[in-house]
Length: 106
Image (cartoon, rainbow, N blue to C red):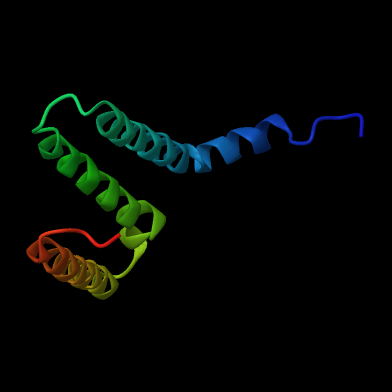
């Protein structure tokens, strides 16, 4: 092919539609990089207090944009929140089980 793959108008329309997904992706990658940096350097014993808010932001962004909860009807939003809360309860029960045993199984 000799010509461009997209016209200028098609390219602008595509970039307009991909604006939010690209920003979400970059934000999640920056958050992931922050978590890796915190884990690799371990700058202070209280660093976990900074990791928790970063993790919560990552979870909320993933739920709102990747799961497209913002575009759903209110009933679907409610069940998304309920499902996420149930998942947190299950993870919490598993972690409590491991933490009360005194050591993590290897």
